[in-house]
Length: 125
Image (cartoon, rainbow, N blue to C red; front, side):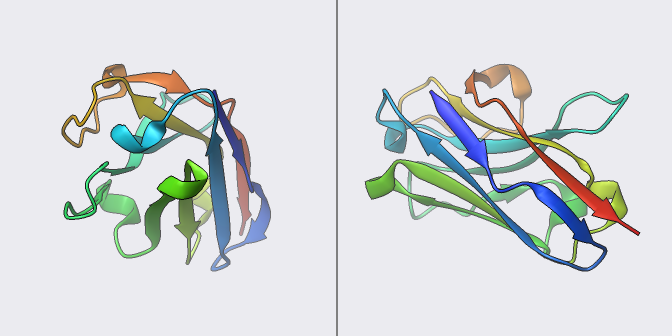
């Protein structure tokens, strides 16, 4: 089970930190990702982090340099630090996990089998 939190209302240029707490499974062995879905749009990839600390996280182009994904395996949690937020970042953000043990980084939505309930981020202009 994945539980996302930390969403809210923020002004353009502001910051938010999303958290995703995992339970019922040792998620440290799997790739973790963040996706988002804006109103009327499909769910899209935002960032992914490997189970391996030697692998560089992977980001969608529009968030590179502004968002940072991280994980704390001891707490079975993953985070998304979002800086310099823009109105176009407004969406429901979902954390997700793949099910392949020690698998590769991926941005493909269908490769993520476990999903949190989502947390709403609203960026006002």
